[in-house]
Length: 465
Image (cartoon, rainbow, N blue to C red; front, side, top):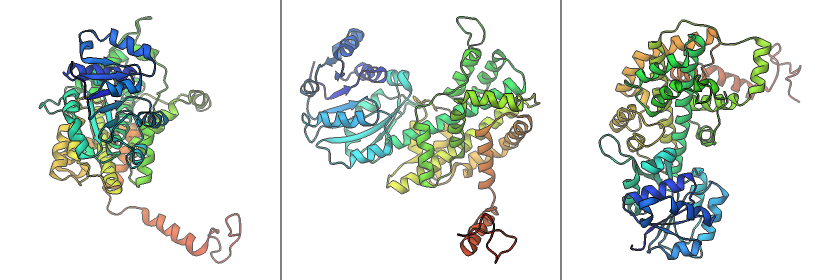
């Protein structure tokens, strides 16, 4: 076997899957893991693909086993471990060698590393799709120079998922941290998409009194229409699954507390830094945080009584509310990326982003084809203003209003659906209410913090010191 031009460091779940994917696509690859026994176990389990994989036991051995110029993929935890690995590689690499951080890095770290004057080339890529995607076809969002992307594109496009039209779901997003930024926004949208589905599930369970077995075919039916997507598909599967131990619905055995790895939170924080409203994603992050406070929630129910009440809501309204919520969420996400492109000087191509998300990633859905088309017509236009999606919203918003109103009246918490509707109403209102806010600010500037019962008599608890 010829010396491989590509290597991989970190044979955890994702790294091992990605290495096997690369080997399966015909590319020889050298691998190294800090714990040598992990490398031995990986090779032992690689089967027929082991012949395309070169195991190594040291970093120096990894570099020596590769043909120059080398491209080395890092699959190590984000943060300090990446910096430590870059420092450890420096003595062995040449200026034309390329190191690719493919972990869930914060894009600010990627920007910093790209500007740090490393003694080798560097790029950061976002990889979405979990272990299954890494093994059989992820969505890949690359950040770095166009030259470096051209160099590794043959491998990355070969291992990526393919959309229905045969296009690889891997592309260059822009300079430095652009790829990791797009991946973070993807994860923020993922949080919101999952939360909106959970809210609709809650209405069916608590508002309509439906069992998990009754809910499963509803999601399955929705997955045949506008909402066709990976998340709706697996929601049907989860709702229909039986607990292998007790035999009842699996959903009833899952603890009501959602975990998170932090990328959705990064998205919400960065949106505030950019001054870009993404209330649906922010509401989803909030809902996950609240879900972990199980003790306080139990105390709240004991004090105020059970919240959800039975309600009459049509299943068609729930489907249309989910369609509207999804459009509004994605509109916010793409608007945030447009703002980031201007802030950081990235040439983010929004139709290209939408196309990369069509397969392989968690938020893959049929709707992304239409989003790519709408963004191609006018990349800078908010998706809620695009004619195709404006028609969808005109049809689905009345249902969203009915669902949100029913939730408010009957104690069904619908934070993301409510946030989407509030954002829409602010965005479609030419005459808003911010003049009152500005008037208050102007008054503070003129008079200080004082009571209004004597404009020229500063006194009371709000008087200036």
